Length: 124
Image (cartoon, rainbow, N blue to C red; front, side):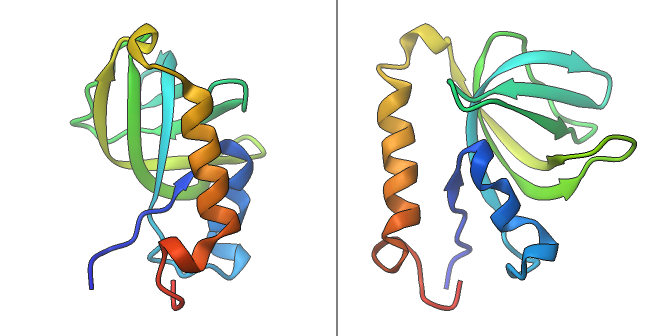
């Protein structure tokens, strides 16, 4: 069986945190625009759904203003309250202006969470 990586919005992060009872192997996908870079962290803005702090890998190469898909694991952020994502990998999707409609992505994500049995194995 292949690894399942549910697509999420910032509001879904709590459901994939290890304390939520979700399997600790849960890896998520998140789409957003790089809005800040600070050493080993970055912030992406996920449409009108809010921002997410990323803890980057040493080999991460993000660029300000680019649309990126992040594959990672939800974690507690050190020194601040809240959740972030430990980056396992990223994919550059280019200029956010070239994205036809982020709202479509949001609707697909919401549908996959409402209809989990259609999109994911029951044991996940």
